[in-house]
Image 1 (tube, one colour):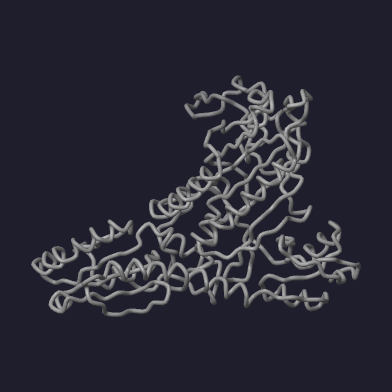
Image 2 (spheres, one colour):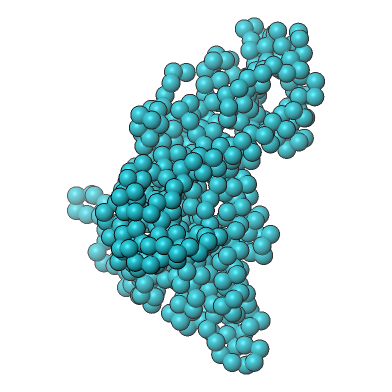
Length: 489
């Protein structure tokens, strides 16, 4: 297989687009801005989904499903929420088609809806209208619900996985009796996301709070995890929102307390999306293709037989059948690529492009010597090992690869994190990329001016950031803590 990717150094954006398509992850569809997620890409998403779903259930949440369509009037009930999403909403105005006099399919003007329906960009409004029916007493709380769904945000500039008009995600929506419970929930889910990103995706993330300018529409506080991609840009990988009582007020959701008082409910929402696929790709992959962390790889080990004659393939198959069973017993996903339509070199390049963590090659000479060639995708290193007990070595090697992938990404972030104290230093560093720790005077006006002049935004106010007296890089006004700036996707 000839080299199929533009190099990262030559054109990072083109490299990413090439990789998504050539590795059979996704492709553009007939609907502008929407994508088709192909089986291999969806298999990775399913692995993510399974892990996250267990994490949610382990923290007491249940899955439910709410309507795709939301009455337009619901959005007008929470002012900042509708303002945040108004420009991205897809609107259903009619419910029927008909044939015109020329036989063409047209919208039936007589089938206009009394109230337009919004294709959900997020589900707070429809869910809080529902919660009003579910909640009467403190005995009904907390409600801890998650929904796996698709949402639509009418993006004008789209990019596979990173920003599409329709995307897949999960959205948690919880209701609580007290502010403290709701805040604790939002913080807990932030930690769940950070744990998933680092332990499974191998992506180190910063945990923090969004500035008012970057806060979710309708939230009191937005918590986030931010990753640094190989081109020096930040990617928001997940958010968790403390919604206060904003939606309870908008939808009149109250409950009777133990003291027999009527009070408004406290709320959170939180979500991650198929954007995580973009983070996975851009954090680890190289000019040869995907590099997948073993914990999320649909295929963890691929075995490629080297043969010219049918009897050679038969002998190799008999030898590796036992190994395949032993690997599967250990919970390791393995594929035996015995296609006779492609040569071994093509298969090597294909599985390298698809990021399979370990490749084994077995030929007649290996059978005679009782050996196997082992190639690891993360370092491209190869070695010849004895077949006896190889399943234990593979299990250990997968663990090593998972650790190495995370450490490599961590070192990259560490080497591309900078402290700056002047406006000139800041502007110069923004052009180079990376996470920039700088003082900010805390005003939305200053934040907007910095964004207008440099395209850099405050990615997060670190939760574990130390208080430190300083001066805002832009205004020179006092600041008590550094925040993290970067250009972002």
